Amino acid sequence: MYRLLLVSGLLVLLYYLLRRAIRKMRADGGAVSLQEEQVAGNQMIQDPVCRVFIPRGNAVREEIGGQTYYFCSRSCADTFQKQLSS
Ligand SMILES: [Zn+2]
Image (cartoon, rainbow, N blue to C red; front, side, top):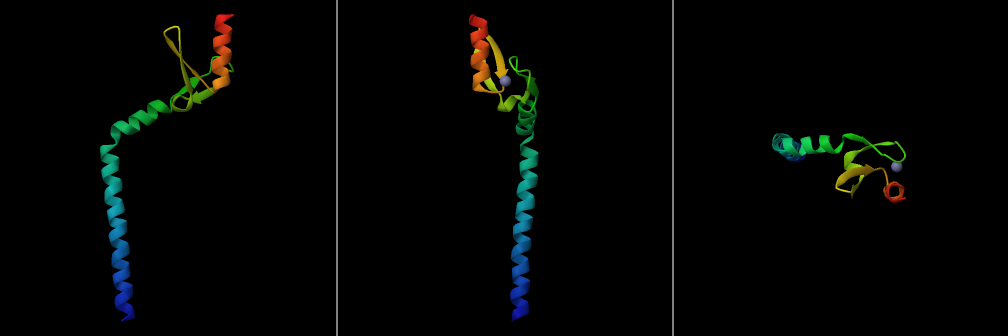
């Protein structure tokens, strides 16, 4: 009786592992565009104010005078705008 429980437990575990593997495989196959997007989001860009490099996905995006700038933080974006207007 104990052995039967063990075997069925193992089977359930195996089933879950298999299902997870299949799901992961499907996600890998179907998410190519998402991965490319992530790569684009991880592209390093330089903050024009403090010269720090930040991944584009984490940057603060600001459109100033029709051009898009990326900053490491909100305060850098504000500083940049003040610099431009002064
Ligand atoms: Zn900055």
